[in-house]
Amino acid sequence: MKRVAVVIVAVAVAVAAIIFISPKNQFVLGGALLNAGLRMQDHLHSYDFEHHEDITAEQVWAEFKRQNELSASVRRRFPRSTEHPVVAMLVCMDARIDTAELAGDTRRYYYVVRTAGSTLDPQEQEMLELAVANGVRLVVLTRHTDCAAEKAAKDPVRRAAFPHLVDSVDRRDERVAEFLARPLIKQRIQEGKLLVKELVIDTSADHLVTSFDEVLAPPPADTHAEVPHANAAEPGAAAGEH
Image (tube, rainbow, N blue to C red; front, side, top):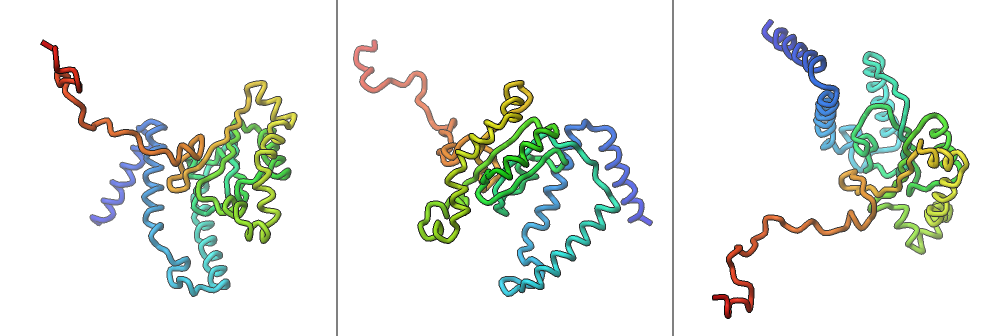
């Protein structure tokens, strides 16, 4: 009976929080709870909770299906709202990048196009243009630190092994220029209805910055470092002060 009372009180507090706190605070609280759940899962390194390096392809497939069934059963019981996306992101397929954490948002306001090395070939350009036609107002084109595709493009052996991939990486700037020149994209930008931003993801933190130099820049100087007292004499200034 005591346990039931505790549950009822907890639910009542949660409902009160949802009703009375501001939308922004609800958003932050939801994010905190989501991150707590992610951290509970994050240290479970074996994919199926049993096998490590010796896991077989069939075991991976079986666990993949099982996890999907579990997730889908929860979604059926607790359906989520559907939002119309206003942001489209081009992101590398690197598993270390979590687009929900990148956006700081698990709501469905985002189209996400993922390719190896964030390459922007004609089909991806069309996907993003279709998103803009459907109402997207911000397109974020990203690259990221420690990218395997970019490393492959700099390695002669891997260039020979993955010619189509490295060609797309080599031509990325050209492809971005092609995308910006597309009539609809150009028109929406000129009308002030669309922004296109090219950013770099710091892979270690899913942090968006403007350049690789910003990721690699040294930390800011310590503002608490010891400074001379105001009445301390400057070198060579003591003579003739009085």
